[in-house]
Length: 197
Ligand code: 5GP
Image 1 (cartoon, rainbow, N blue to C red):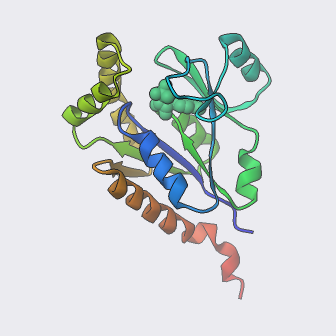
Image 2: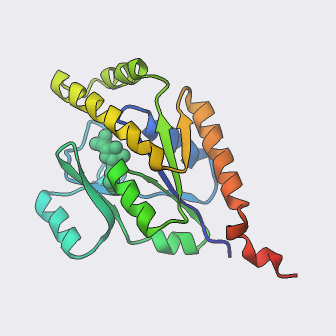
Image 3: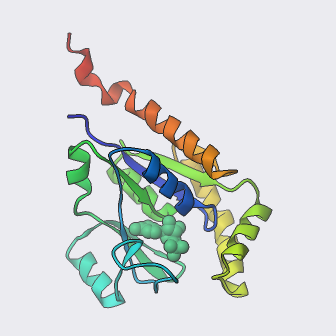
């Protein structure tokens, strides 16, 4: 049984990670999305247990104490974390697991899981990024500026990843990610058993 790929995708706020990840999840067989826990309030249309597990700060701290997270980080004043349960099980079953997490969390996972696939999604330009965040309509001017400033800093951390994908269109970005995953599956290190002739 081939082990699944641990796929970590990050990108600055408004890069369109969510949409690209949805397309990857829809297009690929045997892949599952790791639902994170967060202390941020649900946005309109978000459902507990689907987009996130929405926890209180006390509940989140209890999960930390119980060592339930692969990683967690504070992002824009809220806590976000990747629950450990299920991930190992899914990978061993040969399923890919997709984590859409911030740069701090991703670098922590990279230390623990160096055989993961680390993909950084870039916006085509800063102007386009601003337009996309504004278009979402869920930001106050203050939080928009905070997110943009953070975006520039986050993008620099993207240099630590394995792959850079520009999200000009969802189709292009998703196609590139699928090519990356296809190449990763062919790496010699992942196929040593096939050399036993
Ligand atoms: P949002 O509040 O817009 O859904 O997410 C804000 C940021 O938190 C995004 O960069 C997203 O990738 C990140 N994030 C979501 N889940 C996790 C997680 O489990 N761990 C970490 N470290 N970051 C996360």
